[in-house]
Length: 57
Figure 1 (cartoon, one colour):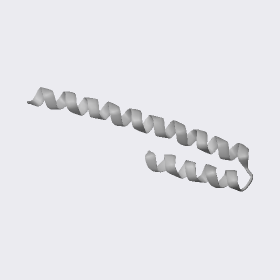
Figure 2 (cartoon, rainbow, N blue to C red):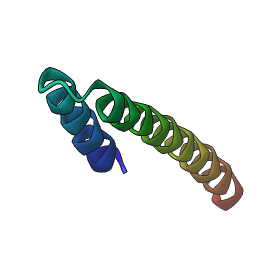
Figure 3 (tube, rainbow, N blue to C red):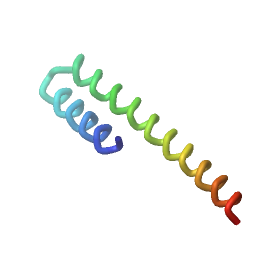
Figure 4 (cartoon, rainbow, N blue to C red):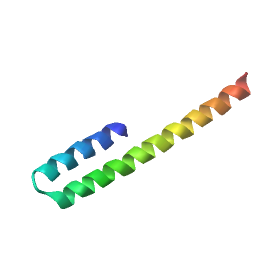
């Protein structure tokens, strides 16, 4: 998911430089959303892993 966020970010920056500010801004917005979702999933899995590790021990 972070790969897709990076792809959208780079595409948005390139589009912005080429003069397509509207769609470039949309791509950067999508990249922000994907980044936040990826971080939230990472934190969720870390918490689940810690909780599962405590139950086993």
